[in-house]
Length: 75
Ligand code: SF4
Image (cartoon, rainbow, N blue to C red; front, side):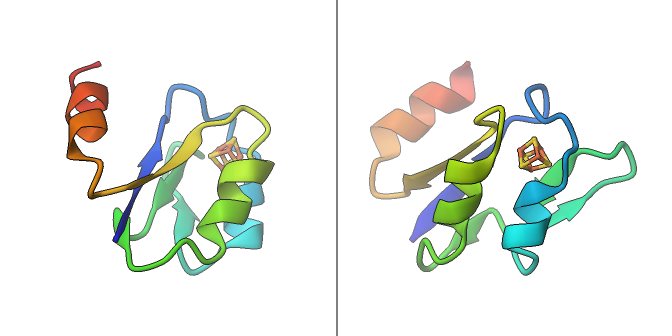
């Protein structure tokens, strides 16, 4: 299981993640991307979205890495 972390403050609304992974991302009413599901079974196209995002707004984390997730959620 993996968690999709998308930093809306970094997102510039280019839509690339939606184009490469349309089942997992959509644009919200503020023209920012958001994950359709916050947790997914496998990387799938999320890895491509993470790599291709021009501002590195997307990070995919294993949910087994709970220590890192807890630290990031506090930031
Ligand atoms: S690829 Fe990155 S910058 Fe572009 S819409 Fe997706 S999250 Fe936002």
